[in-house]
Image (tube, rainbow, N blue to C red; front, side, top):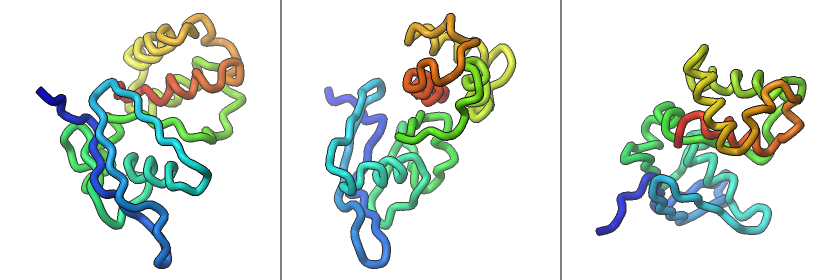
Amino acid sequence: MKKQSYLSTENLAAGYDGKAWIREISIHASRGEIVTLIGPNGAGKTTAIKIMTGLLQAEEGSVLINGKDALADPDQLKSCIGYVPDFFGVYDNLTVGEYMSFFASCYQLDGLVARKRYTALLEQVGLEDKLDFGRSFQRYETEVVSGKGADP
């Protein structure tokens, strides 16, 4: 029996001013699978991800996440996905704990609920004892953990 896709894109296409950025991208991934997009600079990897996360609109195609039409209602995506961009921002002055608390609030988590969630995530990557460290201590791991705030 075939597993149902958690993420499914069909024939995604996007462009600007008559030039195609991406065309005919189809991806199928089950819950818990890790998907990697590989290609040269300018191939459309970031554009495809931005469409899947609701940051850009597609000209054609479909995106289903957990069976829901992600293009019709991109705001519903926040509870279904986590996204870690290649450049994450300017939050280097925060400790790991402050950083995690901030991103928990982006997922409408606060107080004890937020602390339990991000502590469990930090335990998964062995950073639970680093809450008071500056975020740059383990920048990448902290970013990945914060991207999992939605429990994708």
